[in-house]
Length: 381
Image: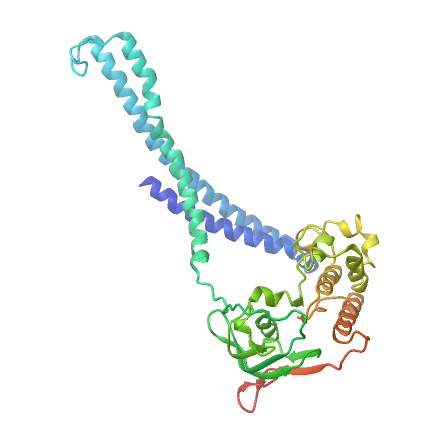
């Protein structure tokens, strides 16, 4: 009974720990914003209250764990005491059973009393192991929902496109679906010839980012989306993504150093190729300010770089990959004027070189996403 109560308390404790960890990490990442708006002391108090709640839950778990161990310890000690009482009364002649006609000697009783605690040691260990098992069950329950959630993977094919062939995209009655099957955008109808620059225009929530994710093969869809006359769902997703470069709003730099983050696109790139993309993305402009240049450790969440600098590193990584399709999801969002100018200049130069090696870029085409007020449907692109 006590052990079952400890297991339930452990489950509640791990839920509280998860909430506290998420709460603390969220405040830690938004520390500058909290400081700007004068919410530092208020959030410190909130963290103190959350920590106090977690402390109380932890003490509840320990109380039940000690109670569980105490119950087992009580029965163990009682059993050893009964052995000692048996030998004591046997020596006094009050008990005359259990020795099969042979008198109980002092040495035999002494040896039995020495070995009795070891005999009951597994029972003591049971309390410790049961408590550890209860902690493991509590941790496992916190992951069970996540692990048992069915993943809505887009359909995977095995067709591989020619990596040197320019990419043409054609969509017919194309609708993007959420993992739950809800239509996020569409139906869309468009044709994007190879070597063309296309700008997606639309209000927030109209499906611009969803379209980019669908083109990357990360979202399910209905209708038809053909890449070089081959349905996207029939393509090998890994081979298809090798032909893509992507730059988003929030640059992700998971590798330890700046060099390694750029080389994620092509680990076998030569040093002169690396230096070329660093120059084209204006990363070289701030390298002298870093303690170890291109080998500087960027830190967790790019803590060692500003947002603009991290975005330039992401652009350099995209330019290093010889792609047939470059996807840009508002790469200049949240940047200051200087960083925005540098990032867009690098991307424009990269697109111009990819489309027309002579340096003359093609005119951009605009596609508008959003509700068609006349028909209540998504407008065509």
